[in-house]
Image 1 (cartoon, rainbow, N blue to C red):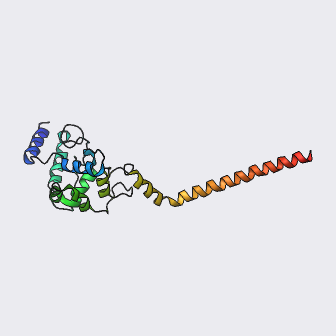
Image 2: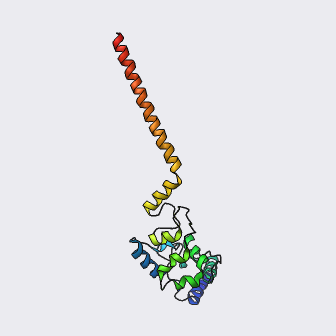
Image 3: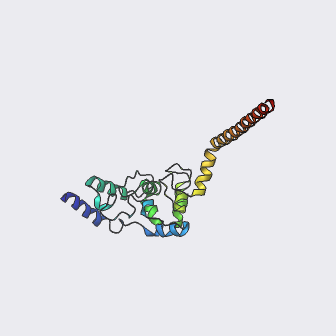
Length: 194
């Protein structure tokens, strides 16, 4: 327990001011998207990295503190990042850009999405991570995205299934209609013969 406290104090002393979430990005995303966003877009905990709850710095064990320290030293792009206070998207940002370039975007948060590019889609919902950042939706949740974009993407992905269901429905209604007309004719011919 004392080792954990010592490590926590050491991390706090060695990295003053960098353990806080960066509100510049949240302010930009909310203005851009018109949605309320919290720290859960990039962080493991929706309240951000500071605190004692799971996914926050105060709850980390010595191994997680070491992983945090390693992640904070990932200044260049392409380094593997497994920060315990970041979620998959937050780790992806640091891996893609490096901590140094990421911090430069604090002054101009609107440049973060273009820097990420449109190639990556962590949740495989068809909306690139950078677009979800601009939309204020979670790039790690395939069910959280702009409804119209998700509708269009799913329509494109499943057009054949939708067409087959439509054809089956039309065929079924046509068959039911003919069956009912057949019963009607049988009933009419039976009435005439009596």
